[in-house]
Image (tube, rainbow, N blue to C red):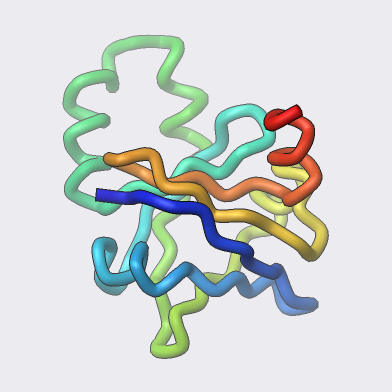
Length: 116
């Protein structure tokens, strides 16, 4: 299960280090999609479950279409596609937050706005 909040950074090559507790759960890959200004991250098995449950719902098509499977490299990084960076408004500072069955990545400023 995903718990906790961790600071992260997106470097100039669009790499982001996934926090070790989250990597331990995900293994060597993570499925990522968009929801507003957040990246929603799922273990591949959890993603397959979501697809089976929601693939026939039109509202989910956009969510599924925006998804990308990322391989986690040996240093725990993923290289974000430009669309995920642009839509999430992440420029450098980010936050990874656990939500039991998935984790979310958003810009630090976006998280602070939500917590106010």
